[in-house]
Amino acid sequence: MNRNIITFQNVSKLYDLGVIGTGTLKGDLQSAFAKFRGKEDPNRKIISSDNTKQDRFYALKDISFDIKKGQRVGIIGHNGAGKSTLLKLLSRVTAPTSGAIAYNGRITSMLEIGTGFHRELTGRENIYLNGAILGMSKAEIAAKIDRIIEFSEIEKFIDTPVKRYSSGMYVKLAFSVAAHLDSEIMIMDEVLAVGDVAFRQKCLAKMDEISKTDGRTILFVSHNMNTIRQMCDRVIVLKEGRIIFDGDVEAGIEEYFKNDLKMPARIDLSESPRSALSIENRLKITSFEFTNCKKADFSAGFVSFKINFLSEKEYKNLRFLLELKSLDGYSVAAARSEIIEHIDKGEYFAEFSADFSSVCTGKYQLYVAAFIYDRYGIPKQIDRPRTHINLQIRGGDGTRRWLAQSWGRIKLPNLRLIEKSYE
Image (cartoon, rainbow, N blue to C red; front, side, top):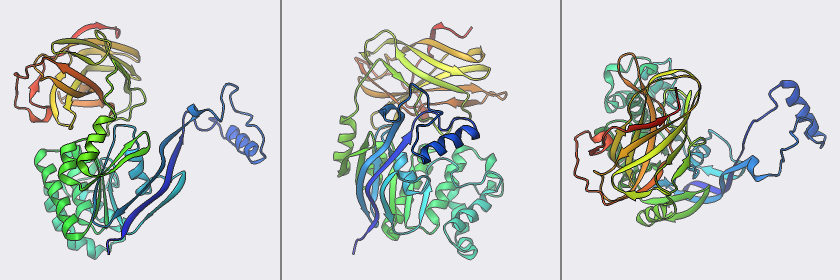
């Protein structure tokens, strides 16, 4: 009998926006006592309203679905659709505001790089820690540890504290632990986007194996539609916290693309989720705007754009990166800006010109990131909004190629600085 292993019934998750609390213990106690007595909050601002829609945000709204044992389900949707919230609810990282969630079996999760690892412990010690959290005995973990270490490809560093691991090493060990420890449900949230292509394919093959041989149920979030096609036998599409499709993979991918191809010239990135790979949160890209067109639909060639950003500290040798991806999530091209030698605290903008003449005609997704070079000359990403900018390029030839696969096949000329406000 193929019974349900996961059930969501009318589940909603509501978040309060803005500042939570008054900022002082005394004020919080006053507000709580007034609420208990049914009185008006004495610390509520005059202009605020507890009933305004702006004060609250539904990350998920009244969703219901069942997943059967052994299914491989892709959860897709654009940034802010509620994918990560859904997985966090299932992993009990947070609780639903309303509705019921039921599941049968133990869960292993990879929600963010390093989740579940203690930074001061070694890789070996973290394997035992994760096994203990799942309720496994030391003997059970010891029986699997050699296979876990071998699969992770980091034997040389297994007795090194994980705080010294690169993001790729984190992913390799985290996936190996999740795949080999005893659990009935495996949850993956975008983390396989990090790391080398060979290991990614090795992970996908392993997930296929454990699903078919062990009957493991897999929930998989990715923006790479070819990976979804390869991995999943069912797709749930989310939009603005609601399920808009649940069923066949190809039909779900078609629905995913159909519902978000707006191409505004300007996009606000201030509230966009940030990449887990960013090393700090002291600089934030707040908006991106094409300045010589009314919408992000233009002929191949030179296009100008403005990046607005906010810095909370002094930076040296700041650069911006544009990464162009296909709608399927594959990297197509990349371009780096000229170096901004120095900025202080404050709000700034930089306007650049980019040459897209070597890119084929088509629809694309554009991502923007900020990075610096450390004292060893190694680039360190300091901000990367996860929200993409939709655009369409017309009349491109796609003839300029290069071999660096991690950033796509086309190397765009460096972004040329037009105007700046950081001096």
